[in-house]
Length: 95
Image 1 (tube, helix red, strand yellow):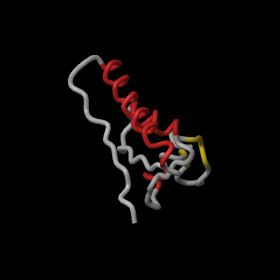
Image 2 (cartoon, one colour; image 1 turned 60 degrees about the horizontal axis):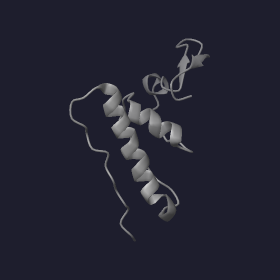
Image 3 (tube, one colour; image 1 turned 90 degrees about the vertical axis):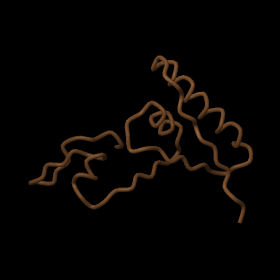
């Protein structure tokens, strides 16, 4: 089996937040563009945090896979659920 291609978006030194985010987003897009012609799919492993880079990766994705346990704490990222009636009260960040 071929070894998967890997690239890492490096941390950026201290600077204005907008400048850092611009560099990170550019590195992600350039990395993906460099492999687009030679790969059928790409897996991007994002941290479990709400960051600019994670949001960009999520917007670019055709499919999102979100691991979760069978608990209301994990389900909360998909929907807000009434703990007594189990009715969906509203959608959360990944819905």
